[in-house]
Length: 459
Image (cartoon, rainbow, N blue to C red):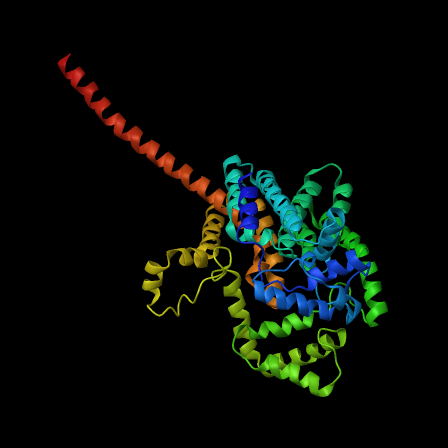
């Protein structure tokens, strides 16, 4: 209830992020208004994007007259962006009869608040520590960046919730007597989740590898490959559709090489602009973000890595820092912090003059560091459970270390961080209490021994 209250408060005050592109809402609008599935309209996106930039937040299609841009649309088949969130949005709009984001925000807020119960259940199943599990669930419910992302009508919060649900299903398959039933359910959830964030397909295989010491390699193969096979079947219709529209094998989305190329811009470079300009010169009529565009980007990306290997290594090292000790989400309080290290008065002046912005900037870093401390304190005592969480965190982070790191991509790993913090805190508090008890017992035993000696002397 506390988590839901925080998320609804964001709905009523801050609202969703204006940085979200209007592509998803245009896809949902075209499904509801025209029955055209997974088709975008460039003119509608331009109009909605302009209005969004002016208002500072996504504009509801219900508040805009889209009849002209719909009648004179410039249509294209969507293949570059995940389409799962658009289908959810279209479904809620069809049920409620209104193309507004309020019902989407409320639905996602309720769903994500309930996921805190899954965090508690996972912690209990892996470690059997009620206080640590309760602390982890409470931290998940209270964590502001998650609450802020939960109201955005985009795939980010779905990636978090589906990751946690898949971990819970893998635990059920491991402990239940009906393993095949739960493995099939896991595959179905993973297949549906791939339409939101393709990386969720890695959860079940990585979980199976992490538990190979318990199950053996034959059983690990069954537990890893069965969900992967089932989830692949759910992707067949999408793959066929993409082949019919683009005559190319695109099992999920075509934006892989674009992401790889844009990831080079995490550090100052001219390579990205050079690659895009070269594509336009070689193919003047090419459509950006089309499969042909991405195929050319693959060539230029590989060429850039071959010619500048040291720079690429620097980018990879930078991504590791961004995904760990430098991870931060700076939009959840009041639109983002300013420059911290570049503050005019210096770092100390920033700390004194803008403490709230310091909290906003440093909170994810503190969570990560505390989680690593908790993992270090509890590794030997709960090695198997910790190994499972480490595997899940790696399955979340490693794909983005290879491609491109943004703060929102890291959020599916934070539930594991909260569990480690809860475990570490409980273990540390227990040790402090035991030491305090021993000191109190020792201090209390000294006067008693002296009194006994005095009584014996008098006798």
